[in-house]
Structures are given as C-alpha cells and as structure tokens.
Image 1 (cartoon, protein in one colour):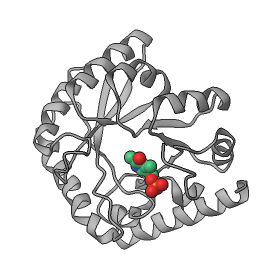
Image 2: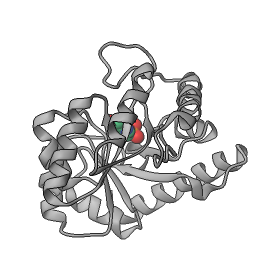
Image 3: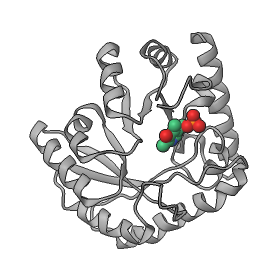
Image 4: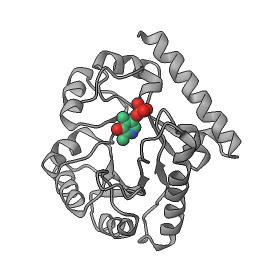
Length: 235
Ligand SMILES: *Cc1c(COP(=O)(O)O)cnc(C)c1O
C-alpha cells in the first residue's frame, strides 16, 4: 500500500464523516479524525503525515516510542488510546498530547506528577465502560464525575471529554445506543463540572461504526483499518 492508496482512503473516510455530519445537521469541521496506527509501520505513518493527517492514535506506549523515534518531529498531535499502566505514565507524558483512556485516579495522579516534572500540560479524556463488560477497561459511568473532579485538581492536566469503546459487533447500528449514552452522559455532566472544565470531546467510533458515531455527536473518531488497511496481526 503506497501513499496514493492512503490518500484515497483518507479522502473516502473524510467524505463519509462529512456526509454523516450533514445527515445529523452538524458541521463536518466539528469532527476530528484520529488515525490509529497500532501495527502500522513508521514509513506509512510518514505517508499519512504527508497526506495531511494531523492526529494519530497509538495503543501501546512502547510501540509508539519506537515509531516516534524514527519519525522525527512533526506538528502532529498524538493520542494514547490503549490501556495505560501506571508504570508507563512517564513515557506516556513524553509521547502523547492527549490520553484518552483515563479510568482511575491513580493514572491521573501519575500523569499529573510526570507532566509537572517536564512542564507540560496533558489533555485527558475519561474512558467510560457503558456495556458493563468486566473485561473492558473504562470507568463505570457513575465514576466519571469523580474522575473529572479529580482531574480538575491536577495542575498539569486538562480534562477535555469522554471516550468509549462499545462491544464488538458486526452491525454498526447496535453501537448507536452506546454512542447516544456517552453523549447524554457528557451533556448531563457538563453543568456539574468544576469551573473551568470544558467537557466537549466525545471520542467514539472506529472503522466499522464511525458514521453512526458522528450521527450521535462524536467529536473524535478513531480510525485505523479504513485508512491503512487490515492490520497484519493483533499485538
Ligand atoms: C484499534 C483501535 C481503533 C481503530 O480500529 P479500526 O477498526 O482499525 O478502525 C480505535 N480505537 C481503539 C481504542 C483501538 O484500539
């Protein structure tokens, strides 16, 4: 797969995002595309950068570090979208601008501490587990406000929104209720947020269901396969 194919896939994805936005009476500009690069080699990430991608998502801190080392500097924004272990928070602060997968206070404390040490402000999203599947990471919805309040006390963190991953399903429509619930949760939490917290972001939707997510209010869609093709293997 070369740069032409990546460009073409990107164009199609952006087009589909725009159409879904218009269907929902939204402006396509409200939706950010996070290109998910787990298992994607650095040279293809470089091609995506050339093709104008501005946000990338990585699942594994170590993998992100290796690829970033060979990519060099760019103005791209990097999102951590995989489960974060507390012993990886220092590296995560170095590598990422946004951590989308905060689901416990310990992670907030550690991110804040390391961000303070390097003089960086890290944006965070609270990952919410709406399906109740115990194997899934993410905080229960009832715990989101507590985490937002805690984040608001962290000088070096900025809580910007919520993220969710619905249960795996072949039928995108079955993800819709989860997306709608995340939006309702955000809307309900907004008036309860501490002063200064702008709870705007809704990171939801992947290759199989991003159009449904956009219709339900996603501000960030995380898309891998539809841009880079099928991954070689899961890590
Ligand atoms: C892998 C992954 C994605 C992208 O999945 P695709 O189906 O390849 O688009 C999005 N979000 C998270 C959290 C992921 O792990």
